[in-house]
Amino acid sequence: MKKLYTLIIVLLVALNVQAQAIYKTIESYKLEGSRDLKIQLPRNYNPEDNRSYPLIIVLDGDYLFEPVAGNIDYQSYWEDIPDCIVVGISQAATRNDDFFYDSETFFPSHNGASFYEFMAAELLPFIEENYNASDFRIIVGHDLSANFINYYLFKDEPLFRAYVALSPDFAPEMINRLSQRLSILKRETFYYMATADDDIKSLRTGINEANSVLSVIENDKLLYAFDEFEDANHYSLVGRGIPKSLNEIFALFKPISVREYEEEILTSELSPYDYLIKRYETIEHFYGFEKKLIENDIRAIAAASDKRDDLDSFDKLAKLVRKEFSESMISAYYQGLYHEKEGNLKRALQRYKGGLLLEPSQFIDKEMILEKMYQIQDELKN
Image 1 (cartoon, rainbow, N blue to C red):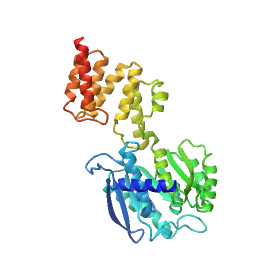
Image 2: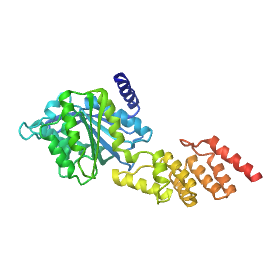
Image 3: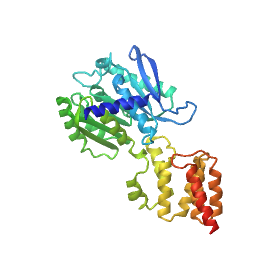
Image 4: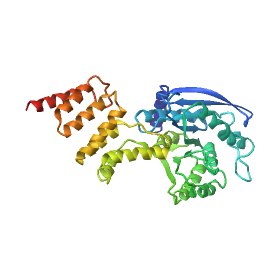
């Protein structure tokens, strides 16, 4: 099983080669030196676009960057999560200094305090000045760095919206402080934590203690998730925790599922079209960026409109698709389908014919358009 997860990580790293990975060095006044960064941009990233992307900061970027970036590239390719900007900080030579905390207060001090300030005062402004990063930020850490990410929660306005703590090596008092802070959050915040059955024993004990405390916090602004993986150790749990955490963080973003279709859309007081619009508005409000309409969701809303005999929803959906996908066969297909359902076969045939010269979509191609045309021609003859 451990070999399987190693293979998965290798596959994701190989896929990551197709994304835009660049290397930068940032000069730091706070650290009195420079730091090397690894940066992965979305595949179709265009700096001239107005579109902004969630920002993922990866501590221990020497070894954590590739697994995180690979997962982002893979899952965003299938539209399960949004495209993201991933930034890894190389810390192999400075790790102990960067994550240093005072032995009495247990808060960052000396070099640790400098690194803490570097993040807010220098790194984030550098990224936001040079790349289209949104203010929906995620931070990822492992053991010492997984403890350090918690300090950013203690700011009056936390720097990040999501925290991924993989086998954290908690500082003394951190669990109690973390519980108190998460209990009074005023903005929706994700917190993910993971350990494993073969994790370092002392860490696993502390993590399970933390889970028993954090899991009972009553705050609807806290979105908490925890995993204790079987057949994994301190290092292999990383390959399992990263995709699980991303699934939790971007749960609202995911395409409409069969369960959502059956249990929510078909039973909603809203029309299928209004449900779709509200869903996308919720995503934009929650994450702070707009989600592009995807074909999976179009298919689900079209099916729901048909099942609920809601011709008005189908009409609105067809117009929205035409607006969003004017150069694609999908626009002609759903316009034609709407006219079929309203009984205007001649108009439907015109729409289908007009789609033959357009670009095929993920699900709609020339053969499907021709099949609809032949079907309507047969019906018109009869």
